[in-house]
Length: 218
Image (tube, rainbow, N blue to C red; front, side, top):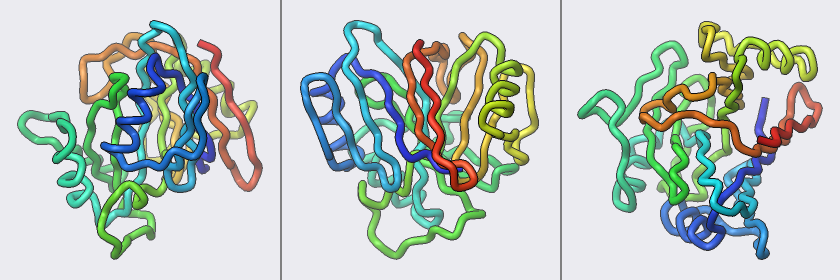
């Protein structure tokens, strides 16, 4: 699975543009009074304007799997990186054969840069925003994780990610190249104490060569 487009909400288009341009180094590809879009590797990332909703999401960007430490140093110069198990700031997902780090954007979203060592995506280019490969994960918040998982399987054929055991309040769907993280409402977004809540989300994704769309209204 691959995430082709991701659309979220923001209470400030202007501050979001500044953060994603200056901190992450994403290029603005379109902007008007109600939305702004960036290119994040193979993914079009869009934020639509909201008013005092304070929407918070978790999503992840894939980086070349030989560039995680370089990406860490690059981001650390511009914003604070979160501790995972203090004082450690790099998470080791042993079962996933992946490592990552986390930081907040201007909206309070929990962003993640992740390197997946099973993928053949190493790069010799010095790391910057154009090195980002894609948005590879987006969190979906629901009151019934198992039910949402079943619905996504029945409607889209999305199976449980084989590297992550299925839990009552946490289920991961997809493949190494694209994941949907299903979590129960009011669960802490790792590695923070921010509680998960559902906000408008639209995802356009490729699954087995077929383009599909999911739109969550709240």
